[in-house]
Length: 134
Figure 1: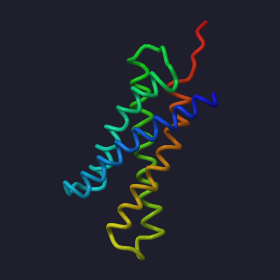
Figure 2: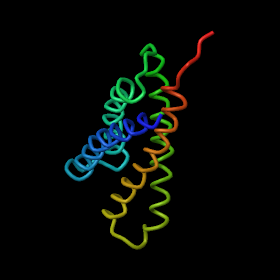
Figure 3: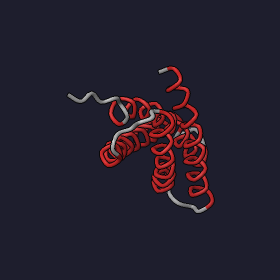
Figure 4: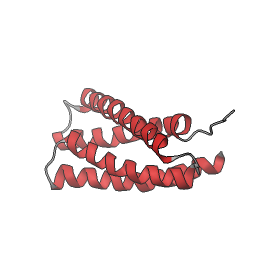
C-alpha cells in the first residue's frame, strides 16, 4: 500500500503536469474559457492517469470496459465537484481583491488540488479496488 501511494503520486505529477499545461495553454494561449480549458486539460490528463494507474499504480488485471466506465464516472464526478467548489471558494475568498487573471489562475490551481485528493480516494475505492469473486 505504501508503494502504491508513492506510485500514485508519481503518476499524479505526470498527469497533473500534462493536464495543467494544456489548461493554461488553452486558457491563456488560445483564449478559451475556464470551463472549456479545464475540461479539455482534465480529459487529456485523465487519459494519461487511467493508463498509468491501471498498469503501474494499481496493477489492475480487471477487464478494461467496466474499469473504464467506472473511471469515467469518477473523473466526471471529481471534475464537477472539484472545479465548481474550487471556483466558488476562490471567487468568494479572492474575487474582490485580485485581478481576474489571478483569480482565474487561483481557481485552476486550488481546484486541481481538490480534484487530486478526491480522485485518488475514488480511484482507490471505486475504480481499481481489489475485487473478490465467489
